[in-house]
Image (tube, rainbow, N blue to C red; front, side):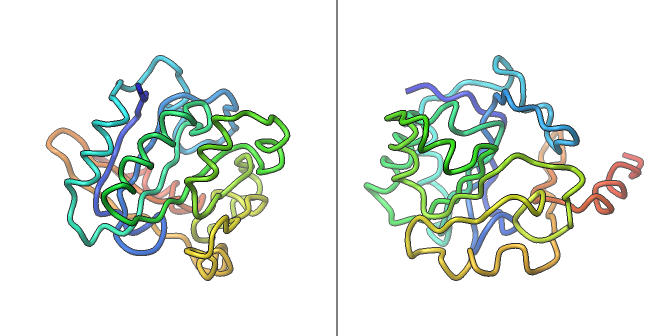
Length: 198
């Protein structure tokens, strides 16, 4: 199944416990004001990969990689392909999954979409809700205080309870032709990063 991606990053620690493989999907219809990644909105942007290819890429990572964090864009626009990718990884390695969405859990459940349900069944922790710029309080693992961390399995129940209780942080990864900031910065941190002269 085809996935439209914005980017991926191995060895991430700012988006959940342990070392994680981060996946940012391409395409979002919500377009929240103040969104940190408006370049993920375009449904035709990014690049296309097969879900099997992405699963193999994740499995090639260090065996200490304990989880996948999926964000966007809006993952539920590509629910079936993401569920397929996660199933393929879990056939080989037991791995935790955190997923960020602009939808609320109730909105997803109300739609009654089979592909949405498939993806929910593959997730251990759901961080839900639209980003609200005025509610960005600079706390860990969330963009704004209206967003919730919902433990869908026991795997990250403790982390769900600690969600939003610590200061947010970001990490930087240098690639051949770019630098990627990973994490959810506070408004102050984002302002400082934007002032850097590259």
